Image (cartoon, rainbow, N blue to C red):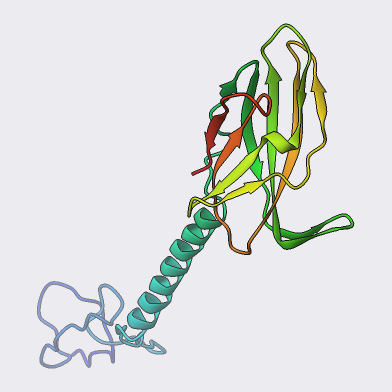
Length: 192
């Protein structure tokens, strides 16, 4: 005569342990009743799903806002396309973040400094002077260069210069107008 055990494995045939009990999804596979020392896992609920979804949404929005803010402060796909005016070719390779001062000089607003590669395509030396460069912002305002070293560019050579512009705080550079000389037609470098 079988007295049955408090737990037993599922098997085919009749059992004398009593009426069959429903099998719970929480029991280990193959068992119809809980073995000694078995603890059922707590039921999983969606209680964490909502806070995790909110946190994920916030991180996604923050990442998108960071990208938009970076695009607003760094509008140029650098380096820009090279443009030519007379014998000089110009290419902007960097727009530095705004600064209040450059060495001992302090800006009325803030300085925007552009790194410009200048290439002499002619057959005689050319001078690259700051007074021949103008920054135009996204509102159409023009700003002359505040500081640039005057560099002689030999025929076939390339120099890299930093051109600083004293502009109102928050100015967004849109175009750099470059000139081979004060009397040349000029060319425009799109900074957007």
